[in-house]
Amino acid sequence: MLAITVETENGQRHIRIATQELASLVRRIGGENDKLLVVQRIPDLPDVFIQVWHRRGGDYTLEYRDGAPDRHFQTMLDGPEPVIAAMTGWARMEHGWNTGLDWVPLDLGPGPVPPLELDDDEREQLEKRVREVLVGGYATRAELAEIAQDYLVSEDYGPVSPEQARRLVDRMWVERVEEQTAWEGETDPERLTRAFTALETAGITARENFTCCRTCGQAEIGGVGSPDARGFVYFHSQCTDAAAGGHGLMLLYGGFDGSPATTTSIGQEVVAALEETGLSVEWNGEPRQAITITPLDWRRRLVG
Image 1 (cartoon, helix red, strand yellow):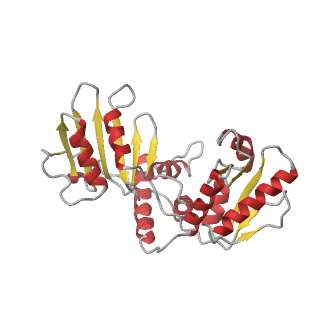
Image 2 (cartoon, one colour):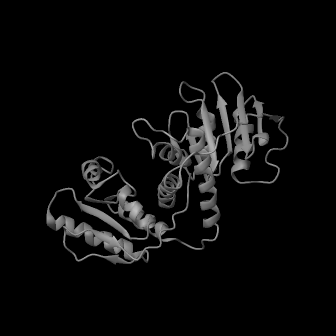
């Protein structure tokens, strides 16, 4: 698998795909609303990407950027195979992946971004919220930038521009990437994902960071899994915020037939799957009682 995220013009997002899947996506593009692929490494880093644009019947425009504006290059290719070779080499960080192609520098550097004019309390509130969602680990840089731009907005007050939001988020994102380089071994969120994957295979719809609250989660969980799923387990974004703040993680679960007996049975399966991965669980066996993972060391690696 390649440690990349691929986004398409039509909004599809592919994470950690095989080389042949990347090749298929490159060969596919060219139609209406499907002419662009943007590839970022995992974890994503600001202004580091490779992308290709192609309209059926025309050349392929391949670009990559390696951080600074003066490290942005473009080349034109007449078929998909050299594009696939270059993008695969870039994804694998192979030495010399970009040799043999006629790259032209593109200086698309942005204009100056004015500093944020916030008082100390506003800045602290804003950075606290961005950090909370960043540590949660499910938001992309683009989503975090939207949060930063909108967080302090009131009816007649919008102190953070899109460019200022991106700059703030990029700084905090890079700091988080540097933090996670010191992490070793499997983290608790990775154990959680492993347990949820096993539950999904066993016929229980399992979703992480699903919807904004319990009301929305209960209303929507039935429509996202397999039609023959026996039950469900999930946690919503407020639960994620609590886990990121060091307060453990609450899981909501149940059976799709609504019976207490099925709910209890699903709860037992959830607890068993979590404990199988080494997570510590608190649950009294009552179908109305949420399952809590505690203690929990919430170190979720960024995807981007």
